Image 1: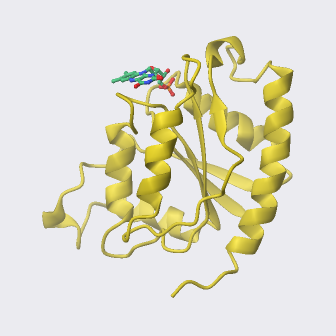
Image 2: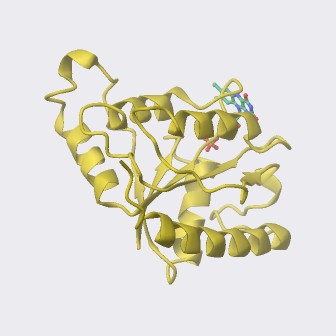
Length: 185
Ligand code: FNR
């Protein structure tokens, strides 16, 4: 199965980017994970949505071609970052490439709550009319205090986190294979 990761942080040393890369590497035998770069996406503008810049068409094509989306996001001001909201706005309009596409959410933060609020908001957003993306229930990955659980290279060093990821990735894999076959009206 082909999965794309949409990461809500574009900064070089992003913990969330590192988490996506860790998942890509550790579970390479389970699914092919492509990490998409949001830094080239222009601000959503309804005036150009029918004829958007190539960065948008390319982004949407990659999402469309994927069997599922893994959202890996920080929390900004108790919700999702604007970078992520912008990407979602593009995905939700004209050709609505998220409809029926399975989603799974993860997030990392240095605080103990590990993006709880951002993930709750994102889950709600994914059910909006322009997205209608079924989201994996439970299996919620909040990597709190991430700076104590990951080394400089981005490898997770905390055994309990690794064991939890092994479990939830297996659940995700099984669920997305079933869900990707479901036909949505
Ligand atoms: C934050 N951060 C943050 N953390 C949190 O747990 N709840 C929050 O509401 C916020 N709000 C917030 C707003 C803004 C504008 C910034 C820049 C940061 C801290 C955030 O979790 C931290 O910077 C992460 O390291 C960002 O994720 P990446 O870039 O490392 O993936």
